[in-house]
Amino acid sequence: MKKKIQMNQVESKKVKRNTLNDGEIKIFGTDAGVYVIDSPIKTKILSLLLNKGLNGSDIVLMTGKSKSTISAHLKDLINAGIVDYKPDSVDGRRKIFFIKSRYLGELSKEMELEKDIDDYTYLYRQAVRSDDPFKFFKFILRTIRVSLMEEGVNIDPILHNAGIKIGETFYDELKSSQTDVLIKNITSFWQKHGLGRIELQKMEPTTIRIYDCFECEDLPKIGRPACVFDSGILEAVFSKHFNREISVEEIKCYTMDDEYCSFLIS
Image 1 (cartoon, one colour):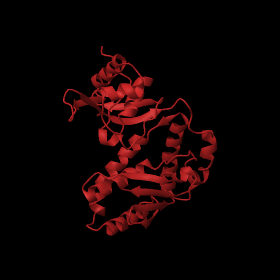
Image 2 (cartoon, rainbow, N blue to C red; image 1 turned 180 degrees about the horizontal axis):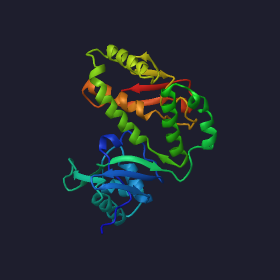
Image 3 (cartoon, one colour; image 1 turned 120 degrees about the vertical axis):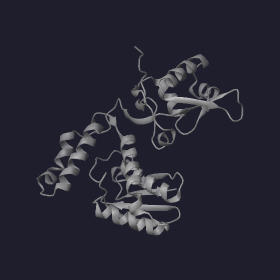
């Protein structure tokens, strides 16, 4: 039986939207199934390939490992369907390696949360007792996410890709030939569905704020942006609007102890 390498598959353009930290256990999805990668060298290689393709010599130089070691790990990654290669446009004798699989998430060896989950769910007791079903479902979804975070499971890539699918689905309802009208439509959509209150901060570069953010308002302070679902929606909507791939970066977040979430659209 063929042994599955510890990894998974990601489309190269979607991998770029997520951070691969060295030393973490990575989860990738390929056509052959899900792979968990716990090899430090393989993780390092994937981190280097995150934003662009590299040739074998560059990977050897940047990892400090021997050519034979890197070749063996690249072969494993290729056989697993996680990495692929193409001819170098400058030097056809060389290969450019790149990630072709879906990045699903990671497992951390250190807990991201300091508080116990019981302390966190205490904040939601009012919501659970409320007659508002929307508050109850928010409680359920946030508790699931925090429970995973407490166990060191990061599902940000999955949430981000889910946001992209939502954005693509609802784009026709929001679209306009004018960017300012599109933003007004997004604002109404967010408010209508209880996702928060959007304000346009400036047009160049386009920066929007979200107050009372559905995704993260009551999440613990983890010191990093957490609105990957929102980012995915915005990314899909603006990419369709401009008919090219648009990057959305969250620069402020409730989980970073900010008073609102802020997204830079470029």
